[in-house]
View 1 (cartoon, rainbow, N blue to C red):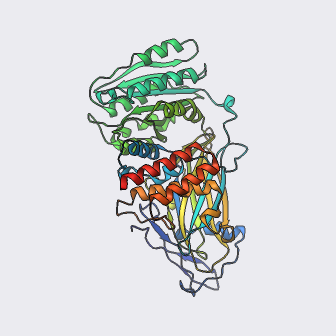
View 2 (view 1 turned 180 degrees about the horizontal axis):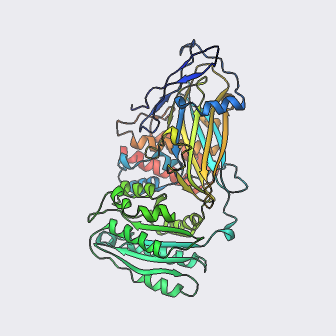
View 3 (view 1 turned 45 degrees about the vertical axis):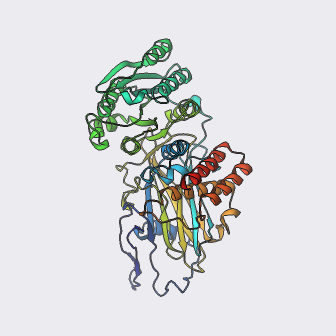
Length: 504
């Protein structure tokens, strides 16, 4: 198993200072687990006493890089939705397209919400059947969307793939239907522009206010038709140029890319594509919302574009999903409550022997960059939750403080930094997964499902406490769908059952 490099700390007591010396390591490395700093005088077979820490001690702990995990927030869900599409088509998804954090973040959570902008922080956990191993969940939530009347106007530039591959049912036709629905749902003071691309890119509608122009916009959408090859780079570049030309001060300016991301002409690398529009992105704060379509889908390219474009991705395969994205998710993302949001979790070396962040492989941030606000984080809107799951091995018999989670973000308007924290003690861990709240169990089942799907790639070890096969996992998901009466959990159980059949 690929692991973070082992982290050790030597405690050197001196009469003058009593400094805690730590060996630095880069937690931006991709891969598996991290070993918490060893305490002198206590081996793995002898439990270290772990008195509860006071607030000052916890602040010191957060400055010690030997047991930190840092990542940019991510609310993407495309990986899970694309996996469901593959299973419905009768095939297992490629392990490289399975991102566990996107499976986990595809389900509703019941975290407490903050009263204003920013985040609440919830940290909980449950012990697994694997000795000394627990699952620890870090949950972040923004305010609800009830204040929609207060959101700023939107200036949305839709960049639409009209290449030949989009002629397949469920691609351009789905995009046109979605845009039509979206046009009806936007407010009169919102604006839209339309850019199309195949072998070349064209602005078919400059930035246009909805008020009095809905019919013109609907006509432009209905006239969209497929053409030739896919020059995605030209489409993104022209889209950002159009967005910059139609920039509205005080509005949320966003590019919405709708494509199967099967680039075959011009620039096909995300870094090269986004380097050409870096000025508009940074100077004007224009963010990217990627909508993937099609049974053949360039998942890696779309995800990379969204990460580099300070946005996120979704995937749609039918009209119901498209309506949900364009009628609910995209309007919700018009308003931003946090820019460049990052999370950092500090595991207490007195209680934690080893830990591993589940997923977020492409969102790791160097520990020392957590408070460097020049380093990109994630953009998050109202009504969102972000969940990170950790596999944590506790020291045998250790009790006390287990972890402190901190989220840092910038105010979308003033760019002032803010932080919020949450803590977890060992005695707050639930005795077993099934003794945990149902939403925690859903999180675990989603993570185990992703873990099983990508375990065909030998770079990944199984999560602790993982069921022996898909059948047992499906049984757990079905029971949860009954207890939660949640249709999304019922769909999860169905997807696991489909995966079980594909494995036979």
